[in-house]
Image (cartoon, rainbow, N blue to C red; front, side, top):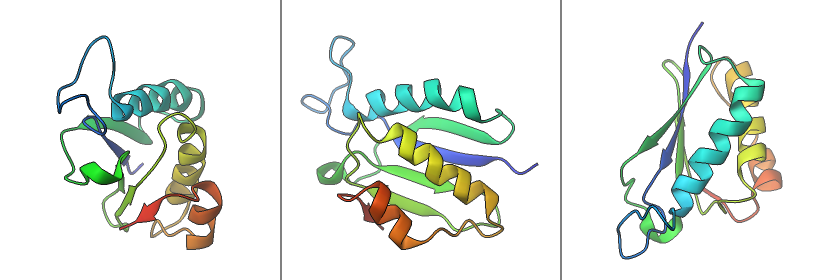
Length: 118
């Protein structure tokens, strides 16, 4: 089984560019929520969710990347941290199910009206 990766920028909207224990960044909040929800719907052999350093789209956080060998790679920006996790996992299910990882742009617009696909 091919593993699919969902990378989340942990620095999105940090306070003064620093991650704080008392006030987690938006990216950290999204990462934590994704991990909680994904454990209910995906096997660890199927999906890896990883927190990564800066993805250099700081003015467009939250930022995620979806990738897998032999499939398209997507970079999606401008995701709100608190309401994004569940729809993002729905999108991951479509990505995993499709041979090339394609999903309709219209679906992205429906799930994330404010998002930008790069």
